Length: 439
Image (cartoon, rainbow, N blue to C red; front, side, top):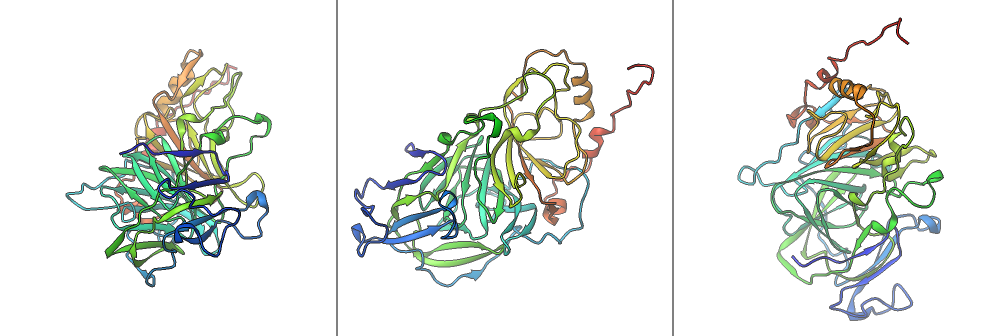
């Protein structure tokens, strides 16, 4: 595979044209009477036309045939994809899942779409307010079919296996320890190279953005220049047996047929694009005196709600870093939260639960459900010699944190057969150290 090229920067105004067709971008206007090379001009809007300039998102695509050329959409099999948050009774307990199983291709063929499994979520795509968390497990590439999400944005976190994602804007190679965001309405197809697994955070009603830095200043956390946008690439090919375009619309899947590739964009310009980011580039902020700051200092991307300071969802990571705090219990503290916290593990061992919480698995601590280090971690950290130490070396854990109270699906609770019913036992060995005579 030839090395892919990218353009750096988050939310930039970009221009790109496939080098096979120099001059494909119209000069001085978006929609000329006749486009260069006989192309069609098509705008993709990611915001209302009247949004302020700072939040207005749109791109112009110059394509061989417009995306309107398809047969009518028809309902298709949903698999384990859902937005029905009432299918199972509410579950307030601490939940942990063992690694989600990837079927072998010899047992069952699953591509990215057929391998989508909704784990939990809340809100409603029709009203454009909510989130969903999905697990994807697949073993074959998408052949002559693509997906676009009419409901919201996909933040994709591969955990095992790399993804070669072809989009209307170009190609992205996304490997474990990288993430990518495919924004609302963008058509994409996923090629895999064996058994593949990962996590998806879907948000309805808003787009991901970089968090405000406040007193941190101008630099830190995820730097805008480290986000990468694909360069234009097109294919001009017919699909006599039919090319399937899949739309996720109001939480359900629909398919339409056409006889050509949707990846026929020769050139484009705009600020509404897919993008990827390498988590190794995150500039960690941490305590260097005592106690430790809240995990919000590890926020990579946020999807804001209408309430200031409260997110529909945050994407937070816990990367390798130095621990130097004095007179401090250094692992995460015991906690009850008005937010919902789903955690996943890309690689390594999470510091607060080195056993049981495994790469490819997950945990959910719902609103006001108490959680924190297991008994072994508590005893070890309470007696540790406090000296500078590397924390989470060789590890990358992450969290999808949301202001929604998340409902877990039947697949998550039963069908997946991955729920660890003994999770609560990791806290049972905790014992009282209380001694009223010892201050």
